[in-house]
Amino acid sequence: VPCRTSQLHASIYQQVHQAKVVLQVQSATAVLFSKLVQGHQHLFAGYQLQTVLQQQPQQTLTLAILPDTTDVAQLQQAIAQQHQLGQSALLVRGLGLIVWAEQPEQAKRQLEAWDFLLHCELELLKHHH
Image (tube, rainbow, N blue to C red):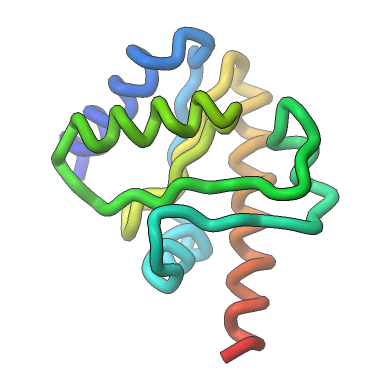
């Protein structure tokens, strides 16, 4: 795991010049969500907290979900796509949530906001099945 994680962190620092801080959390919520949700992304809508995570307010917020892979090119492509969307977070299946920011406080706030959103969506999934 450490080698994949450090590759991913290094890729973020290389590709996103504003990224001075990269944080990763392997919370139960993030790992469970990544294993339950199919597809390459998940859309969040209707949360007040989305404003914390978006540069421009939009109706939906997209979180990319990556396979746990050693394919650096695939990771870099996903990072570039998220960055173009104005997002600074990725969910890696079984590995957790990764966020990046210019300041430690920003990164911590993002991590908390994403974890909250993932928790809410996980609860919704439980009640829909």
